[in-house]
Length: 396
Image 1 (cartoon, rainbow, N blue to C red):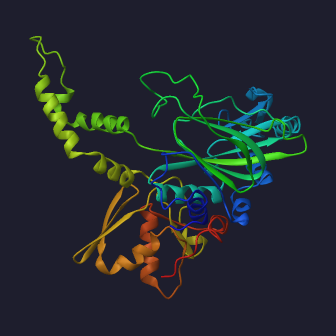
Image 2: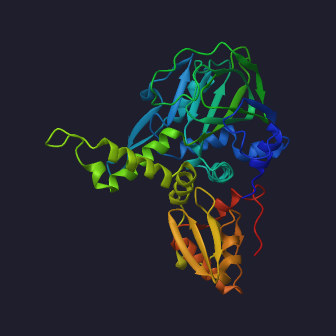
Image 3: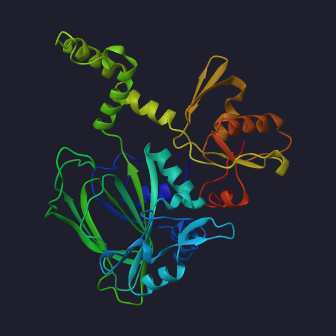
């Protein structure tokens, strides 16, 4: 999938691919001004919040450097059927913002089609699950305390400006669940400055950072989105091996037998064999192949014929020709087709929207099958808009 955000990030940061993710701090500027307004605007973010049922901590607010209690901006309304509905109190959000506060919506890609496709494109590009958080601040606003994240971050300033300080790590490759706590900030300041609309930076896992609008004046604002890329580690591989070991009775057997012995040599040998069989490369390949897609639109034929479809897997499906057949692996599925289906499969699973014409019934039938298997989804006018001008349509 070729997405303008991905190519823009690569050019801005001087990258030739996803290899530098997680390696070093980097900063640049997106040369495409239309791109940042397409991703999100302050009013669109507030409209997104207004039309959703949200709860804390997915929706959070901050004022004067402290988190605002959810009861002050979330309300429980009772509809005419006496059903309780949690939603944001938009008037309260307005007061918080107008008083120099900040509104944060985590996983905004769950609700916004444009950011959903952007995260999918970043996931295909990086090979890692990607999500987006949006931060809207108004006026002279305190930011978060100096902190580090347990995932790599690509931050894009969409409008307004915000001042940042980024420091190096104080513990190599820290984790959320770790052998020791990582509480002492690094003294090494890598960059201190102001992000303006179009600026982008990459903050690796464990690098300390903070952002604020203090000193920026009361008549401005900031909207930025952070794309979080959660990389797999040796620990996640070890956890996978632990789960895979459950298939072996020897691993399920008590360590201390009735005679007080434990056959540690057998377990160690089997664990070594398991680690060789499922080495990190195979582990990552199977993880990506078996990750199911997120929710997507169903195809309801009574609403009309298929007109446009796109792949919706979290990672790019693998298409492998073999003699007279072609195999597709992705989205938790392993499917085999006749070799003549390969061109259609490569088009449908390219990540680009594919328009269907009524004179190509074979492609339509293949698209319907891929929708049934969950690897593709029909595009409505709203979901297609997330691609328009950002991802070039594929011509079969």
